[in-house]
Image (cartoon, rainbow, N blue to C red; front, side, top):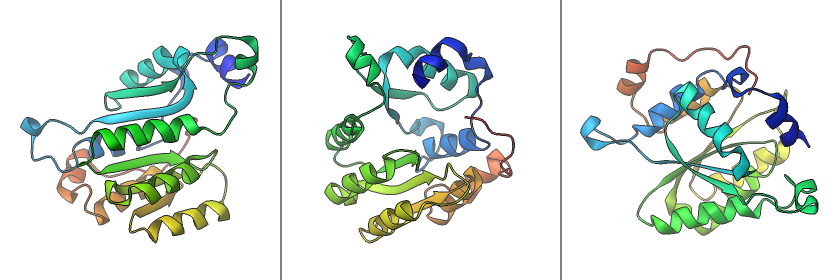
Length: 203
C-alpha cells in the first residue's frame, strides 16, 4: 500500500537523494579507471520493487546525476492477491539477481550497497559466504537513530570472510571508508571537492 501511495501521490521531482550519495556513486563508477578512455564501472540497481516503478526510478536517476545502470526489478503483480502481498516475502528475488550478476562476471569484484531497513545485510552475508573473493566491500546505511546490534553482528561475520564493511549514517563516512580501502583515490575525491555533512535528507 505504501508503494501505491508513493506512485499516486509523490512526484519524483520532489524526491531527493541523501547528501553525498551521488558523489559516492560517481566516485565508485570511476574506481580503478585511469581516465575517460577506460569508461566507467557498470552499476546494477537491484530492488524488490516491481517493474511498474521502472520509469519512476529511471527519472530519479537521471534527474540527480546518479550513474546509469542496469535495473533488476521484480515482475509486475498480475492479481489482486499478488498486489496485496507486494513488498512482502523473503526478498529472495534480490539475492537471486545478485548471484546471477556475480556468476555472469566471475572475474569481477563487486561492491554491494544497501541499508538496514529490511533484508540487505542478511542477503549480502549469504552472497559473501558463496562468493567471498568476488565481493570487494559492503556498505550498509543506518536508517534509524542508532545502529542495529543484529546488523553489526552480521557485518562482523562478513568481515570474518575478509570482505570490508562500512555501517554508516552519513554518506561522507562511506566515501572516506572507500578512500581508506583504496577503492577510490584521494586524487579522485579532490576533483569532486570536499564531502559535506548530511542535513535535510528525505529519500
